[in-house]
Image (cartoon, one colour):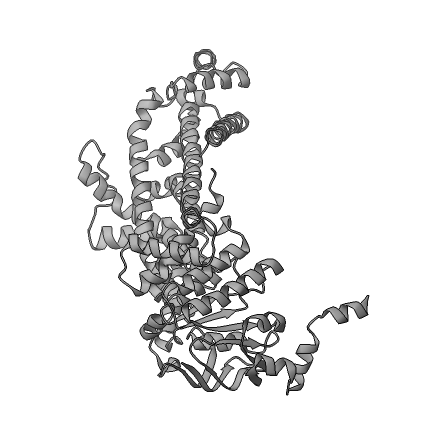
Length: 264
Length: 326
């Protein structure tokens, strides 16, 4: 479905940093792919390239990002607008600031429909309430009328997910979607993403620096380091038999019960 | 909005007016000059001056005079002008209308100029995720920004002089100095005010444009804007629906200040265009030491400032649910 071929992204400022270097990556329909790496490894730039949201004026990009056969990098801005939200949904890291503070939560959830379909407002509202129900937001009718600052971090992230899946996209990109949340909400959101994946068959690209989170959600893991993909195989294979040195260090960095016992 | 909030704001309003009028009263008793010598001339006899002073109540101590003024003011009696010998209310009514018309017209011009241009300039200044700006686009933006900066720094009286020269003396769109009162011919009255209003509006519009652009650019980098793009919003849609509402909050507060500034600053432009408005009367009354007139105008201007700020607060609360008082 999504196939990235030899993608490189270089910043055109005086340092000419290469954020992504010759990356090739495939995502099959319905797959849950985890992309892991430390901050600055190019994960987010990769995600922004997939959605065409990368900063064009300050970067140079080469390679191909094929989404069902269309090269996203060659799309016009109109074509990109048709793709975003409709085909590719996105959830970002900061639930506190990712929603417009002046707009009712329900209106933001149904906005994706407003942009892509001719659904009448009353039907849009119904669909928004349904989506809110499916992301397990409490009391959808009441929450619909609320503003973002009246929701908790976890609830806002649920609202973000609802707005990302309401138009039934083929791919959901979750860029550090659970990083800013506390452990309980984090694990609830991961379970929710897994259920959404099973129910709607939407492929998920889950980006995180936290391998333990990825292990719970994803069936495949790609490890990114300094702009390159250093490892790409099934979750099981990566954890049981990591090939790359960096991956081994990442896995060793996951706190386990044994280690904790040793430390105390 | 609760009753408590309304009461609080009304309380602040009353206290502000009280403090301002007290200060104005004190200022007048400190500065040299005397309305009586102004009225009677330098050669008036000593007895006549004493007689006049007691007639106007000026022989009494300042606090007695102040409370007497305050007492009649709150009952709606603004006193009688020393120099015109007619009630202040009568003297001011058409002057207030003139200045209010001029100020409002200038404000409408500010809105009509700055809103569309500010939006357009911000639209093209946003560092777009959709493609690098062409060098032509960049040149237009720098030229517009530079022009804006120049217009912003020209004081209104100078704009007024240039407009009078170009539109009045060369193009003859209006006759400088041929002011028509509202009671004479409303259409001609408003027509005469167009150019003065324009000279007030130009530099202020430039300021508002700069503010809109800064505020929009500031908001454009926010996460919620990226979210709106990720849902498939186009540039204009995201700008108008998402960015604008957020960016308008500082602009609305600035607009309230601008309007009160226009009212208070009408003194200068009324001089330049020979408009017999409130500002001109204030200037004259200060030099004539015409206390009742000055006090009333000071209270009017202070009320305008306080009310406009209150209005801005209410509008911002309507827009922003986070600062809404429930």
